[in-house]
Structure formats: C-alpha cells, structure tokens
Length: 113
Length: 114
Image (cartoon, rainbow over all chains, first blue to last red):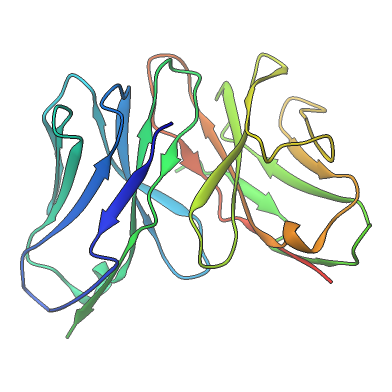
C-alpha cells in the first residue's frame, strides 16, 4: 500500500530565501506525482504535476523533481515571498489512470517579511 | 478561468441526519472525485466516478455514502445517517480526460456533525 510522507512538517524562512520541500513515497510504481498548495480553510490548488517518465517540471519560481528509484520528489521554491505561506501537499498517483491520489501530510510554510 | 464549485461552504447537522454535498465540476471534465480531510489529518480519497458509475472507492466509502450525477452539471455526495466522525472538510475534484491527469479541486464543504 502506497504511503506518502513529507518533511519537514513545518518550515519558517525569511523572505527571499530559496527553499526545498521533500516528499517520499514507498511504492515507486507511480503514474504521476502532483504538488498542491492549500491555504488555511481553503481548497487545494494544483501547482505542478510530474509524469512518471519525467524528471522535473517548472512553473515560474517553482521547480519539482521526481526520482522514482529512490521514491522521492522535491519542490524547490526560489526567492520565497510572504504570499507563498501555505501548506504544501504532495500526492502520488498509483497506476492505472483511474486510481486515486495518495496524499502526504503536508509541509506548513511560513515566509516572514 | 473555469473552476470547480461546491455548496454549501459550511454545513452543521445533527448526528443521524442525512446530508447532501453538492459540486459543480468544470464543464467538459469527465472524471469526478470526492476526498475528505479531517481536521489536522491527511486528505483522504473517498470515491472516483466516470461514465456514470463508480470507478473506485476507498474503505471509508461504506454503505452510508453514495454519489450521483443527477444531471449534466452536478455531482453530489450523500451521507445517509451522519456520525460524529464524519465531521471533516469534503473536497470535490474533476479531471478533463485520459490525456490530462491533473485534478482540479473545489474549495470544499466543511461539515460539522453534532
């Protein structure tokens, strides 16, 4: 059964710092992996989706990498801003395509002005 | 930009009552999902729905739960007889089709069972 973990559980950084959030999954047989952002009391916003055949995806200041063999994904945020403060969730999608996501517990990020 | 909408945003109910949570997925999306998140816990998958039938459900999705797509736009989750432990945020999500795996989530309905 797929298990997804994320470290650290919480992170506080000063504005402008580059940071890395980590996601680990136990079963390397994933179809894809998606990173989400969740603001307090709100829904999930998709940030990046990496297919199992890809190594990384980039969107603006965000870069997500995927290493299936080691069961890891990282989300790199460049030049962090206070508006980046949120909880970041990773979710692994086991095959086949109709299967559901398995979510990690999230990393709560605070970017201090 | 099209988005998934959910109503109501908050619902308070008495234990044993039936509740229906409503979702309007993005039009032309074909796959629909319900997830829940108990306060302070992980987001958990409940059920996926495609071509007017359930394609997968989790252990959480027992006989108390049902889903329906009554018309071309709405997707509902019914809890027949609510329990205290059903209190959670319920998220609806939709996905366009086979070629696109990204799921788009709604803002959620916060359900409180007293």
